[in-house]
Image (tube, rainbow, N blue to C red):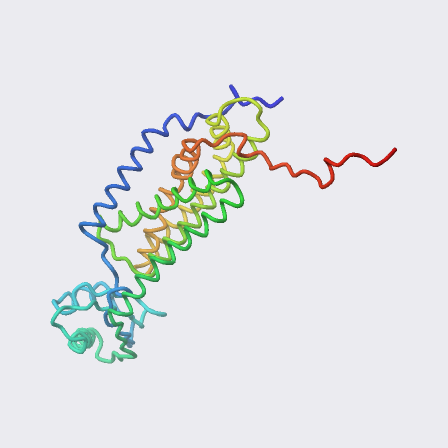
Length: 315
């Protein structure tokens, strides 16, 4: 018979649940405080601004171009190659009292110093109203994703597990936003895409743990809910470690070598993976235990067959 008590090789992960839960609450409180006081450093996609695409005769040194554009009217410009080393995309933030035409003229003046044959291929202006709509739609997308996940997990598992998974996802998103707020990293559409990716990644890890918890509640006849959860986490830990490490290798490579274009996306993924890995254990599973999850909640509902209560008509 499969015994859960004194199960060989089981690690008591939940013995650290209380201090780590306190740490998570501190991180969430600090994130809310930073978001309320410092806010988010919205990128051009949300605040509006000017996009200038240039084509040079030869490969241009982006470091030198950034240094030359460090003027009052063009300060904070985001510069990256666009397609090739000769094509450059420059995104200029809105400056109070400075017209877009003045910013574009300053860009062309600096660009001609580096290359007389530079060509201005296009200029686009993103209005602040468009940026406001993007911010609202982005926040709505994250909220809808969390609600859909709550409904899905509730149908597949049990509402206590569903509450734990959504709490873990909200924890991951809030802490990641808090990091961007504290460090005042630019938040653009690529970062929003990273946040939504983190939601999917964290949920996948949580679902794997939940599947094993449900199986072990049905298989193991002895032991408390904590014993079942500890055994389930131990059994899935090798999978979690391998998945996390292989994903981190890719994300770290993007973070270090991916360039400025996807730096925010890689940062959001890096923070989300680290936070999401431990939240699957110490937020999702532990909250389900605190809500009273037990073996009876995992038992399938018995359906009485029609006519089972009717007396037999046979003689």
